[in-house]
Image 1 (spheres, rainbow, N blue to C red):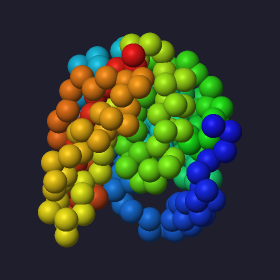
Image 2: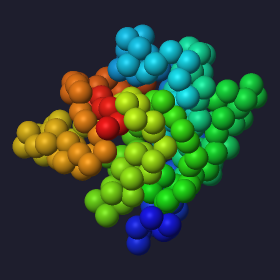
Image 3: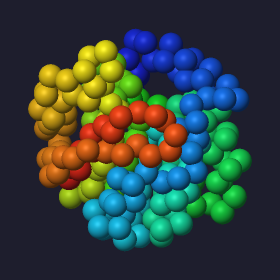
Image 4: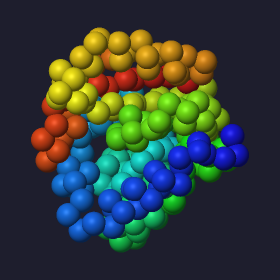
Length: 206
């Protein structure tokens, strides 16, 4: 797990280019916290005051909102322009903290964390990268730790969200060695994405 998948460099270039564009996806630059994420905090699925990892934090608005709710947040993204924007907007106080990291590379992030969030990272990964991601998450999250995965809607041409009804089973299988899904529901991505609601998977580290 010391190297990313073969196409890692290509993916990094793509996301660097996207985050370097002034008009990149208004939804990811929203200053609003997603209702699904807010509910995870309000219900204490994320334990109060927890050390929380925001994987694929982008411009940092969710990390900042969770820090404002009392969490000690570390936001990571492998696109340097995204982290530069996150630091410029939300990095002055030291909480949240932001760093450039590829979560599919072993040892890229140090824990431990009691909670973790992924809104918009995992569903963009190629399959060869997924085992590294899950292994890294299991390494940095404490036993019993909470993980919220927000999965992007399916393509409209394929019938919308999870057109063949297999997504939950696939997610359970991918994470099964170290995580147990405790709740599955629809996810409101919020912001201005214009996307249909996706799925939210609440998991616990085994």
